[in-house]
Amino acid sequence: MNHLLKNKTFWVVVALLATFIAYIPVFQNDFVNWDDDYYIIENNLIQSFDLSSVKSWFTQPFMGLYQPMILASFALDYSINGNDPVIFHTTNLMLHLLNTLLVFVFISGLFKNDRVSAIATLLFGLHHVHTEAVAWATERKELLYSFFFLLGWLLYFRFLEEKKTYLLILSVVSYALVLLSKSMGITLIALI
Image 1 (cartoon, rainbow, N blue to C red):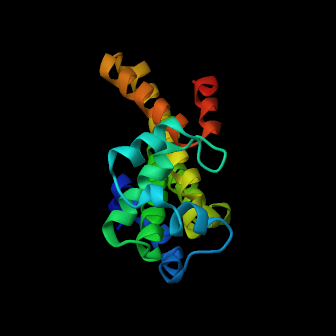
Image 2 (cartoon, one colour):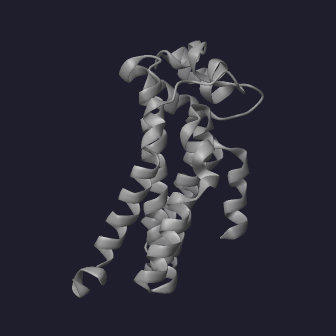
């Protein structure tokens, strides 16, 4: 048992499983009438991947914001099963689990201590501040932004350690995807 508690994979699985269990109720959520109707239910731009829609995602602001990655991810969900809220909430939860995993990778690389990494990851995964982003379909922008932000940050740190050009290129691509998800992603360059 002591060996199991020292295993990094064990702690990753515990953190991800606890996070998943905590967010199981999102599968019962419907859309909300705050802005899910504009972004998802009544949004013709997400109902296909035709050239006209894709061009609109990247050339025109939507709801006053430039966020083509959000529209693309909603279009992907819509292509699976139309306006089924379960699909949209499942994607949000999967993104949150990926973000939780990236936090574990980052913290364990930073502190080289599995207990610290496990505690920080559990706090991140289970913290109630993420509930809105996971449970409210339209708040996907927070989850996508966080995913590409954390990924870009991790790739840059790996580039600093390994000095491999492809890691820098992937970091820059992640940075571009952050900016295409949420304009607040511009802060990644300041962090780096």
